[in-house]
Image (cartoon, rainbow, N blue to C red; front, side):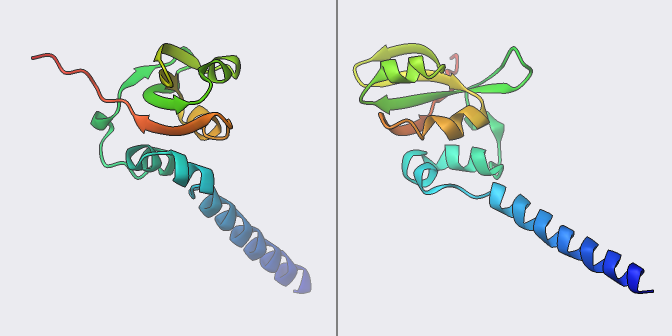
Length: 123
């Protein structure tokens, strides 16, 4: 009987720890809150109501890539860090990133902010 009780307690503790880890993963870091615009914050959190507000292309690995505008003091730092810079003018670059890359992009010191790229609509 004691073994069953210990196993039950262990299972409950594990469940609480896993739930806490899952909840923590769905929060924004202070840098993400500071540097990501509201649409990208919703994307990272998985709370976006519609994917139509994003410029999405399928990535070679099967993971979607999102077009974002990056304001940076050093666009070369963004390139050297391995991000796909498709164009740049002054301190603004168009970059294609996965959601996980988006989360790491904001950690670069030169990145000031990241905004959602808008889709081009034909008329």
